[in-house]
Length: 120
Image (cartoon, rainbow, N blue to C red):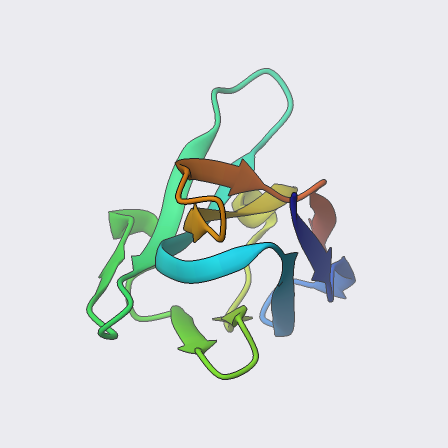
């Protein structure tokens, strides 16, 4: 099995910063794409940022210039640095990873989510 554990969420004032981390462990042969998603109350889950194993990144238009995704392949960890936070960034943030397991099964795994609340 593969586990993703997020950390770093919390309450912050508008204009502030937070850094989310997501550590992956378990029966991992290789991790391909990784990403961060978020889901606000009453809304669908949306992609915030993604990163390939080679480091190519993509971002939702709403976070471009404010958020930065990165990964440490040696630690199987993905990060999301969030700056200039806005109240509309309030959501539960989930990390996801596309993993090839040691059993040679390719599938997507999700973390349990971490709450980010931005006060105005």
